[in-house]
Amino acid sequence: MSVLALFLVFTPRIGMAQNPEVAKPTDPQLKYSEAELGAIIHLDLEIYKPEIFWKEHLGKDQISKALPLELFNPSKLNTDDWVKAVKDMGGKYAVLVAKHTSGFALWPTEAYDYHVGNTPWKEGKGDIVADFIKSCKKYGILPGIYCSYAANAYSNVDGGRVLRGNELQQDEYNKIYTTMVSELWAGHKYGNKELFTIWFDGGIPEKSAGGPDLISLVEESINPVTNVFNGPAYTKNIVRWVGNETGDSPYPFYIPVNLAVNKSGYYTPENYHGSASGAHWVPGEADFPLREDHTWVQAGWFWNAKNQRVMSAPELLKKYYTSVGSNTNMLLGLVVDTTGQIPKEDLAVLKEFGGLLKKFDRPVAKSQGSTEIVITLKKPRQINTLLIQENIAEGQRVTQYMVEALVNGQWKKIADGQTIGHKRIQEFETVSTSKVKLTITESISPPIIKNFSLYKF
Image (cartoon, rainbow, N blue to C red; front, top):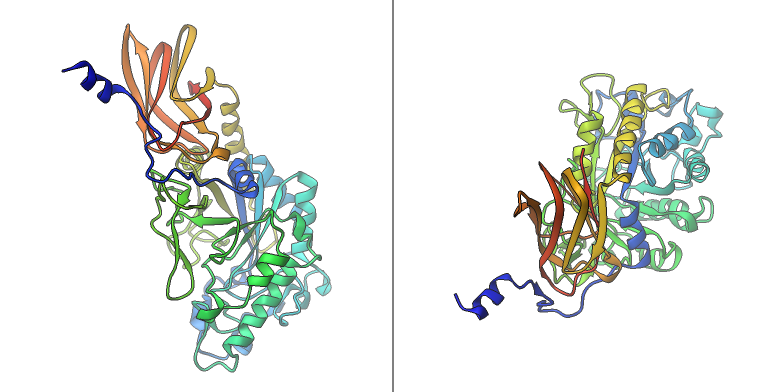
């Protein structure tokens, strides 16, 4: 083999992108990725009658068939306890499901009468959304609000469409939804300037496709520092779904992605993996519930006294690796029971999980650099886990890398991969070594590695 051939084989291919313009995050999107870990908290009327699923009512008289408001009276509800649980697990943000598919609103909305203000709880004077925002401030947790458009059993809506046999018209439902999000996200009642993220969930169609006119609301009213999950295609700080609700990010995962608007008016990424040359910076969020339930249509997202298994702290750590450690955020679904509390079993697991995450504060060694980083230890140490981070403020650049350890005088490959992004965590067979080398073998622009850390767990 010639010297030239050797050079071509072993020299990293850096800056070979077809598109020299590297997509970069907005400041809110950067802060979103840095937050890494959050929780989404679920409470709805349906937990009082879990045998009744909202879709069974569709096409019927929703006003008389909907679950009665008298059921809702969670006597021990304290949002401080919910938010403290998020903090205990190491979370940085929390999303409250203010209105899910039943249509029941956890705040006294003016959109219609199906809300917490017409229940026995606190004699109709309660406001769970307001309490939640206050609790987030108290514990230093970034607040988010969820309000789905796609389904509303009370309004006889599924798939974002008012179903046949209902007196409610599509434009009337759009007005109901616009009123809700104006109160939750764009109004001053809940401190919209402090919302870290908002959730549309199943997406939302554009006005031309029958959806509500939210352009002015999104562009002018919603705080420009707020991240928007599954929002309209014109939203500035979009966050995208990873394609499953198991906490497993598709690897490789590129935050840059090319977006298009489909016939229904929803934005769609080209694929769940993204693309190194994608034109849009759209971080991913891997969501999954703490509880597993394969017998109920609401799965483990909402509390059920039967057939639910709580994941263990070690299981959550594995999910942390497949989400945060694979370049997306991890959003953990938490249930609230009929008393208004997160169950004690769940709280214990969350606290244990938070303790496990603290081990990342104690690396064997760490460094930073660019194309090649060599960590030299004073004496041989055992390692079995690595963590790599790019400086994504300048875009996601790495498309292939390799990590080697010097073992018995020979370089041994211990890990490799494609994407790094905000964070890549990998486990490997324990080795004893005094020198470890990270080589970026391919990237679309000169790589900026802000953290390369080694661990022994």
